[in-house]
Amino acid sequence: MSDFLFVALRIVTGLGGVMLVVTTLSAAIRSFVLPRNEVVRLNVWVFMGIRVVFDFAAKLANSYERRDRIMAHYAPVALVALPVAWEFLVGVGYTGLYWALGEGSWLRCYELSSSSLTTLGTTDTRHVFIAAFTYSEAALGLLLLTLLLSYLPTIYQAFARRETTVALLELRAGTPPTAACLLGWLNHDGSVQNDDAQWAAWEQWFVEIEESHTSLPILSFFRSPQPGRSWVTAGGLILDAAALLFAAVDGPRPRQAEITFKAGCLALNRVYRFFNTKAGAEPSALLPDEGPEDPGRADFDDACQFLAEQGLALCPDRGAAFAQYRELRGRYTSALHFLARLTMAPNAKADI
Image: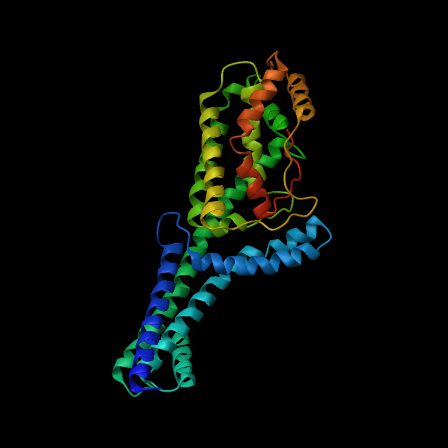
């Protein structure tokens, strides 16, 4: 190899190392510091690579309970793997940079990079300039770990707030939870249209879901402490209750319930678009007992019968009411189905 080609190779390798370090640092900052929802391709590749392993293990399980226990580890493992991947890439980038600066063989540069990344830098080098780079590498290593550790409390606080609403919803919607049972509970004072405080609380929950599950997308995969619960099915249950109220119950639509319904549709659809069109994360093939089914006319009639037994006045034209219910539900069904498959939500059927 001629001297010119060798120098050109060193320059290209050095520039490549710098670009790799800058790209990794940018990914870390955009993941936890940038206050907006932005797809970080590097994180997507890490998450999808780990998801493939967990999907394979889940398919070998013979029950939903065992799959749920397996998938409960996916989000924590993927989150911990992020700084490992970041630091690996930073180490590779600095290895190329040291080699380009003439520190020695590739093995020597790798040892110098690994030592600097896991300590506070080193002076074990022939050049002061390279020693300065080792200290910068050590600082980046600490920074990447600190970013994750500092945001873990934020992630788990958002998870705790989300799951509190999910647990409270289960208490109010029966076992198994249904939209009709939830409306019956809201009708405790004889007028389901008057419980604005509860609808307002659910509106706030949807707003937080939209913000947290797009700015910190790994939150979408943190599973509920109880196997039968899921934030996806909980969101679908609230929206089903609103759609059933608007379509089947005779009377004016509560203003707060309408706002909550809009907030819920926006939240689910924006999380859906984040994963489906931007990140390109397609859910794996489902097992037979996974994925929600749309309720049919018989389910709708059963729900109306239950509401009538609870003392609610229903619309006389049951066919028109069912058509309106299907139209309202169509505003979020695609998002609900996709997210249920993506997160392996527990309920196989959207009961009303």
